[in-house]
Length: 183
Image (cartoon, rainbow, N blue to C red):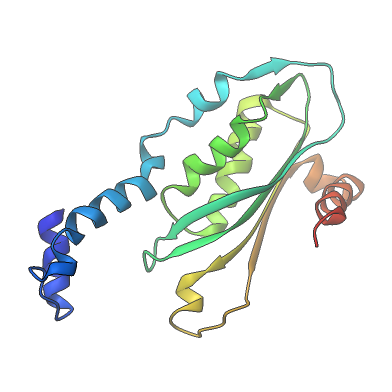
């Protein structure tokens, strides 16, 4: 991969042998491997290590999970917050596992819409809750730095499954709780 990065630098009109760029191909490869480490993550293993039988039938929400991903169209970052809620049936997920699940899917080349659905679908398949809701609010550098160059635009995506899709009261409770302490 380093040779490919070197060729990209040459294609941009740069000299990969100049002092500031000498180690850039290696650094870019390390960076890309880190930013796409989600391909090596097994989401079933992440969640299955922390599933607990709990008699709890009220909403569970983990909000403001930081999200960093790469747009698959331009390989530029998008970043923001992910909010996950679910109505347990018989099992709950260990608290730290939800952010790990978000990272496992975010650390891949992505589009925000798919990322939102992957998180919701995985939770639904793993614990079969009565409902799942995922909302992601993100800013996309492909829109901020190039193209339309709009600096303050956020994209909001949601995936509502089960009760969150069918029952407006549950969906509104989830969305209202997300708004409750957001500035």
